[in-house]
Image 1 (tube, helix red, strand yellow):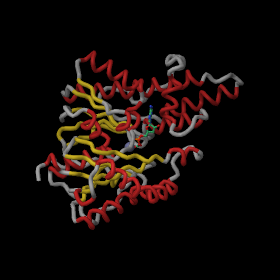
Image 2 (cartoon, helix red, strand yellow; image 1 turned 45 degrees about the vertical axis):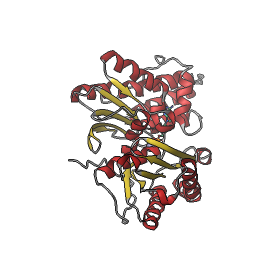
Image 3 (cartoon, helix red, strand yellow; image 1 turned 180 degrees about the vertical axis):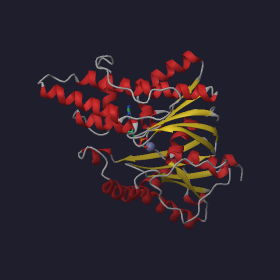
Image 4 (tube, rainbow, N blue to C red; image 1 turned 90 degrees about the vertical axis):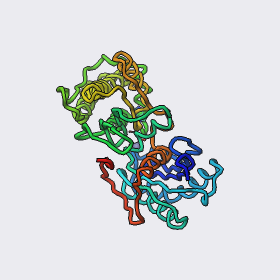
Length: 343
Ligand code: KG4
Ligand code: ZN
């Protein structure tokens, strides 16, 4: 069979989205069904792992059925099964991994275990079919903040990552203390549009040249201190200004480190990935800065920024083309690191 006819059925269940997608070849997306659990977790202010696992069990088969129906493809036509096996919540991952193994075994087709972070990067190949490695990727999600030098489809070098909180986690925590619903990122994004980003001078960590690590815990504490001391003084809290100033602090660090990494590695392309890629100010700032320096810039469409199985299918296609399959002993790996297959 020719590569471009290969049908991949992919499953994603690493956090609070149950998703299944069907992809033909590497870039022709036939369906991408996402069942979000956000309303379920909202009343707890964040994802409750045990509830997430239970919801995945309930949702997974209907979501797979829907993905096949929308793609007008039968299970018997599927050539390979892809699944996220890490990083993520162990109980949530296990639901997807178990379903994928059962399908691969019963259909007699190969299984491809996919790294969720790599999936986020590959979402860009679906949004921008002309994109090819090498490039620099800034991965910003609820669980990760990393700069990855993508040297080839299966060849990655981690330039740096966060020492503590991920960017999305910082958005979610700040939103929570400001009384905004989960997930906080989109809420802060919206509120920040009404505020002054220069109103409060929040800190920016690890700014020394050549340092590609991130840290957002100091910023988080500074925002919490500001909110507490305003409350103690009985001053009204300028929530929109806090949101805008906090967001500016995060974005400046992300942008300056990403640009330095592009320059340092001699790349001409920057790619944005992960849930925080949906942030309108981050996208705009990177559009402006990359244009100023003459670099190409790509970011995924909104639906492909946050968790989805389409990106997992795309990653799986390029893994399988390089002969990198999993066996039926595949297990969930909550702390999975990037896999450099070609090195
Ligand atoms: O990639 P993702 O769906 O899940 C993980 O792999 O973690 O990312 C979810 C994260 C959440 O922290 C959410 O608040 C953040 O992405 N997010 C945003 C925006 N939309 C989602 N953060 C800032 N601005 C947004 N517009
Ligand atoms: Zn994610």
